[in-house]
Image 1 (tube, rainbow, N blue to C red):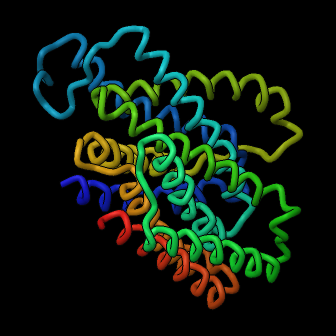
Image 2 (image 1 turned 180 degrees about the vertical axis):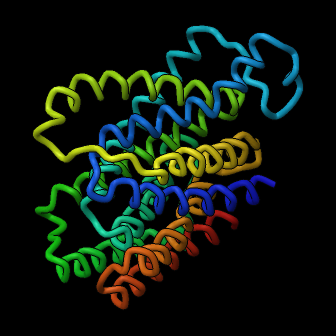
Length: 299
């Protein structure tokens, strides 16, 4: 069952990246991200209120339990980590082709795997080491593909943003595994959204609002709502997967990264991006690396 949830999460995660790319096109990043956190919070608000004030959702998978300040502090930390990953990722997504952003972001399971090795006692076998080496080589090939579009990985700040987003996303995934085997997944998802909205509101009015007239203007796009819908569905399936005691964070993370297939195809069909032949080879190597990681994790 947890594998099925992970696959659904990958599908919606790919659609989330496509909606994000469309929303950020010639648009201000900070208000788009603020609206995203707002809509995610609005989606989870009815479940939280009904759980707190009525017994309608008691015993259901949508029930949001009440918890003390000790857990809320951990959720605030998680929200800050995720928000940091989003901020870096949104800026990187806006300025890089999605067919380049997706494969770079898909290398996240390497960091998760190493974190799982250090924190949860997971050990790398031969297949997993092969997967890691293939993924590292694919990252080098991605840098070669980037140069064809004038993007030098070692000097491009947007590539740095994607790398930082990937690292923080991996840290978040490891933290999620710690939280979700101990606490209710609806509580983690709902309150993460609320705290992300609070943090983004501070960022919106301190960083973007005072300089809004001298930076890229904000324009409303309906795809902004789809960002929140797709991510909420992806996160719910993801949290359900990790909540299973049988799940392994490294495998769930690898399956979720297959979302790059969806975003890559949409980048080719909807955004008509360049150098697709070389990027397809890069993508196939990324997926091959993930395949070896998955096979090794199932041994």
